[in-house]
Amino acid sequence: FVHLLVVRHPLERAMSAFNFRHYIQHDVIGVCQKRNVTSLLECFERCLDLCMGGRSSPQYDFFAKLAPAQANMVSSQICGNFLTQHLSHNGTLGVAKQNLRRFSLIIDLASHPILSSELLGCVLSWSNPMSHPINRNDDPSQLRLSDLSTSHLQSMRRLLHDDLVLYDEALSLMAQHHRTAMIEMYQ
Image (cartoon, rainbow, N blue to C red):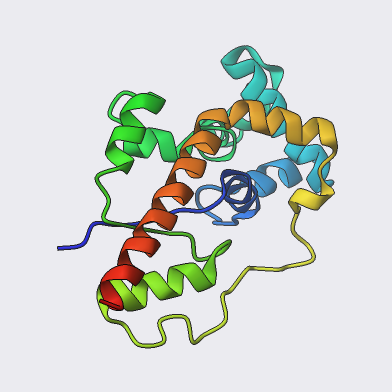
């Protein structure tokens, strides 16, 4: 029995959550557009302000009055420690690290496709698991990490600190899993 966890770099995951357009829910950009904020960067800055100030931030009302779930989505999925929250019953990094170690296979398809492919092939006996190119959603109309200022990135790193630590731990475990799988495969 294999317990598989697919991870993604926290900053990339946050940008994906920001850019995700679902017309019923999880549409931060749509809320900004309805409020006549058409710059993606300005919309993202409003998200950061909300995350830094919480419910007392003026940005909370900016999102919540038009779409109540959006304010919570911004806090949890764009600026929150999403991986830590999902691997821990109490939202703490220590518990999340303990639970992370329980996975027998950890992969990152976006940042480490070759290593992930080799792991899937070795552990699950899949042949050519990554024969198709990875869809990176490179839409030029979306906001990218490269569009953010150093200040924005520093704020995001502070907000996502626990997930960044947990992601590094996941990559370390992925490398250990890979070494073990290669040794077992060639014995």
